[in-house]
Length: 427
Image (cartoon, rainbow, N blue to C red; front, side, top):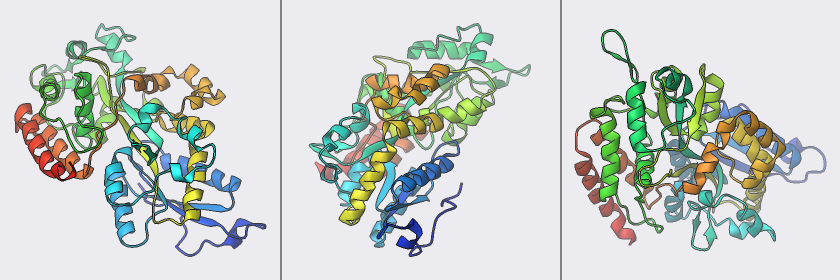
């Protein structure tokens, strides 16, 4: 995947002369952007940026595609410390505490005009939870998601299951998965019942299972976690049992990056994955598929996920205001609807679902509203101080459990102790 747009110009080559008559000065913005999931999203972003610039010829946006979210965050921080930070970026909504600790960003509230509060209140509350601390809004939702259950309706029908009734509970998912497992004449599994990815975003999947067992993983101030609580351990144990006890999921690590291919190739009948893959699955699936909310234990639930817009403190006041102009354009109902349709991410405002384009799309593809409807059960994604370190600790614990290196209890006890050593200084 390329890191830069074809139109990326060398530093210093952008001048007012390139903007046509009547423009005395163009405000230059560099935006770091993550490309982390499937689909030709670079082309979509390029097109949207170009249309924005036609409508706002006094603002030039240079989109830099910096790899996945972790790569983008690393490059943004490296550029900032090197004295050449971007003016805005799409980063994990959960990077907030780290960016604040680095004194890298500014509150959006201070940059909006008289109608600013109305705009900030127009987003889904579930998506704003990771962006607000106290009375301040530090980031704006854009590339947002929840985890959803994708399932192969043809495989359901073949296994004697109702293709219109996906599992609603943990117990149902385990039982249905047993019927969906398919083996060849030699007894080798050719299709698994379900797969939950454990690499890359293991912490995200664990958080989903934990909240379904009615356990939150962190406090609002980002300095305390609950990894070794009884219900968190039960959640990880259920995950491990799907492979080792029920034998409906492969043992060992399941790769985030290749799981969508497994699903599309019929190697698993169900998968847990981001709704950000929805359009890519829709375009590539050769079978009938459904999308459902995640199954419940004590309750339904999924952490939100994905990226928000941030404005950097080192930008000039003129650049900061221009960045907000761009963000408001990108998150308007029409553009939010367009982005959702073309990417699969959840449109970030209710008004986006009232546009004619979205109404028409949903009528023909009702799977598009499952993640939105799940927002009523959603919780903010795991976000704490020194997020990168905590994510690695949790991901390592998940890997240790699913590979059998440690029991879920021991893995999470270790994760809790390590996390407390990191977070104690922020209490």
